[in-house]
Image 1 (cartoon, helix red, strand yellow):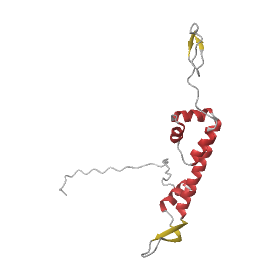
Image 2 (cartoon, helix red, strand yellow; image 1 turned 90 degrees about the horizontal axis):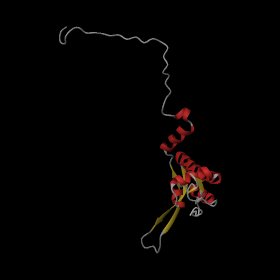
Image 3 (cartoon, helix red, strand yellow; image 1 turned 45 degrees about the vertical axis):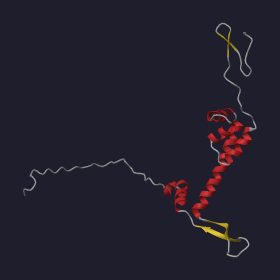
Image 4 (cartoon, helix red, strand yellow; image 1 turned 45 degrees about the horizontal axis):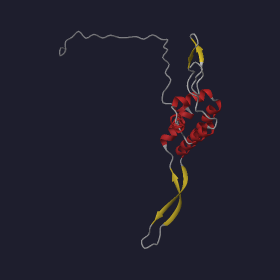
Length: 169
């Protein structure tokens, strides 16, 4: 049976001519996965969610990123687009914004609902503003302060000993 090799495996000669199996099964990777992955990332999918979509382990996604530059670049591009959407949303929340909304009323004796469109104003969110500023302007807004621990002067100590027992003056 020296000539039999299972499909998808490579045979090699090791130790006096015995056959050994190659480095594993063939990859499930398909170049079309890059286009699918960019769309998933644009929707905010994590590496684990992408692995679930392709029905592979997350470590396979990591391997595909290392082995297939088109796949790696697709993930980066899709994640950048999703990150930009979140950044815009955080900015809008930090400064406040307006949006079109509709109130629906059902007046007594009416045959159907009454729709009242209006423009809602949402106030700025202080937490979002602070988060934005801490990340965009850390030099002015960071929580920690820089303390110079180097001291070139001398430090003096005084020790006062009270020999008298308590209660005696």
